[in-house]
Image (cartoon, rainbow over all chains, first blue to last red; front, side, top):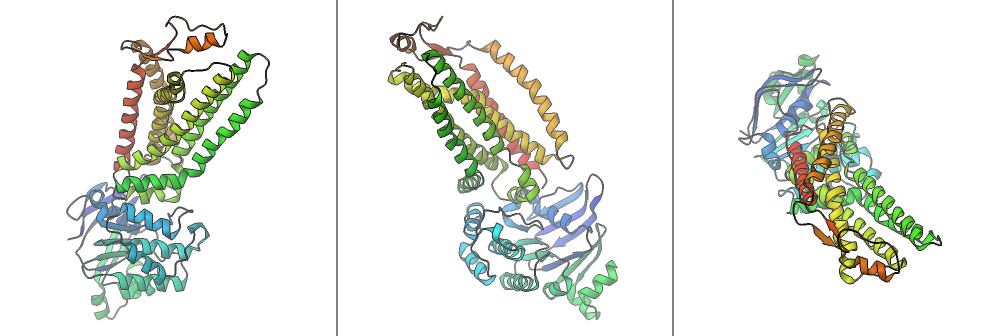
Length: 226
Length: 258
């Protein structure tokens, strides 16, 4: 098991991020994490990444606490957190210096495939920065990828490029957890879909099973979360 | 080691404008010294020394602002990115501190040179050993007991505020630590005064009196037979304090939520 949440609750000062979540993530899955705003998607991904610590329950990643295994986890946060002076060349130096599993060759190929301009991020559009961040994330050779809203606020063409890169770069022993509001565009990726509502697990289903029931992920989303 | 080198590079990329501006400002101070044209040599030396003291204090402020720019990273999300990188919190804190300390060392040694220069201009020609002491030993000693612990404290303070942001502005933990620090500083200074000179002192400027006499000045260094005795206790205590501050900051970094 790559990651496991065991009755995890995360309380903030004024509200609850997630409540009593129990989930397992074996290797080799592309999992869609879906829910309305404030449903706990980002909290769940941050808990697995080790950015947050659970108030109750236990998060185990690679048989240990997530923070101890952070070198093995790829986390792409929802915040656009690149330094404005950073160029793709700087990003290459940053990543290859800090992550032993970063592949500079693969990064160069992804930059080309995603058509990322070689200039400072402060002069890039949001879509270009999003593509650069994704190239940085996917150039690592990890087993667990946590992608939090990589499509948010990004134009249609960039979204298509990002999705096709995720499909292309995915290996069968890797698990990707992807949260998004662009359900219709991304649903073709998901082997498994997790629906969260008010911080609780509303549904955890294999996407194929939903399809056998004659439902798309979008329809299930509306049915479960409306 | 690669992680530390990369974080040091990152720190240099983040802060090179601050460091360059600070070190570049020495040209302004040198120009300012040149503009002091009082007739009396002693007054001229005094005013020039005051200018260099102001430069030293300004430098401390700029360095503190440089090392303490955590808030923008917390808001911008870069703090989260750094929290998830494999190097430990100690390496992150160490890299930030190393860059600021290296900048400080360059700056204050240059100020030491300016002190040597104004002494020369006042006719006090120091021998090679004393010149090395005024440009190297004295700045390093003074940095270890003032600027370097101050920078370590600022780093700890900013990590503390960024990590335990009880409110959006982080003013509550910041205020608590600031007030606590003022009380602690008082006890620290009193304690250092109590223990000073228990260990053998460091003798600096053995031949300063001779140089002053040769310059036909009437000033006399009293009590120490022509040298300045620096107590070594504050040096070791503050050095230990730097290590404690950095260790605490690194530990907080390890435990913090993003």
